[in-house]
Image (cartoon, rainbow, N blue to C red; front, top):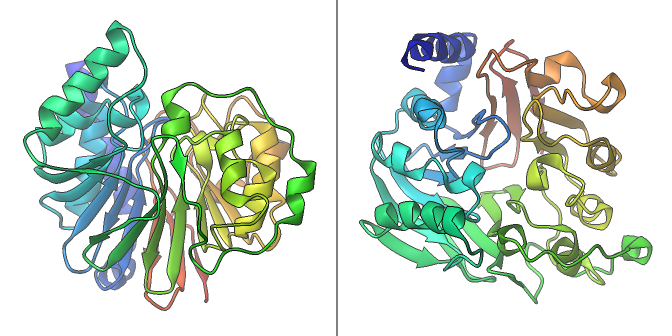
Length: 342
């Protein structure tokens, strides 16, 4: 495994080197959002012009520290030397597993989660205990739906946590949602997914929705009978683009201009969820972290909008957002970029 590290470093360097110097200079005055490739897990890094940093999840444990290395590389690229706030959406290995390895590379000041784990057994307990051993060395905040947390100029409003949801509208929401009429419930989800910390993240007029791995029935209660979430500029597909999540009544109600699918090559990006997102009214583009090998070419976006065509690279999708609400999406694999005006 050690011999793979130079190859990993080369892949990261190649992925970041294609970003033109002019883009890097402009990025210094904007919010930078790195959708780090953690192979079907989640790790989203928000780097503010002030030097403050928010990280949502840390990818997998194991793989010789692969995901922690990739997050640390993204942080270095943005000039960060610490993580001010880490939000752990829930206690599954592809979201919380990388915490100990990351803490060995970067100091983490504040930890946010939904409270104690609800899954039992040796493996969930070991995963949770490894996380809390690190968390207990810093500040700890339990997310509560409806409450907000500041990270520099970012406003992080919690809309779900620990199985509870907001009950009052945020972000101009509250309108009746006619798409709810087509809803069919799925079996109740007893796992950590349904307890995910979901967030509306705001930077000036720019808004991004990240619901972690929140599942179908919980998504319904956020937007039915009324859409409590309002509309957003960017929707990070829920649960890696799996069809246990990405309820059409939610995806279409929040009316994203752009969607980012944080799937892996062999995880997420299901045809059903892909079609739901792609058909969202007003959607300008869907970008994917990986080409989904389990789907056909009709359920993958065009090659320029895919960060990784296979599992040999570690390219990112990156957003450079302005307080006006305008933003640019950049594919670091090929330098493809597109600006979205407010």
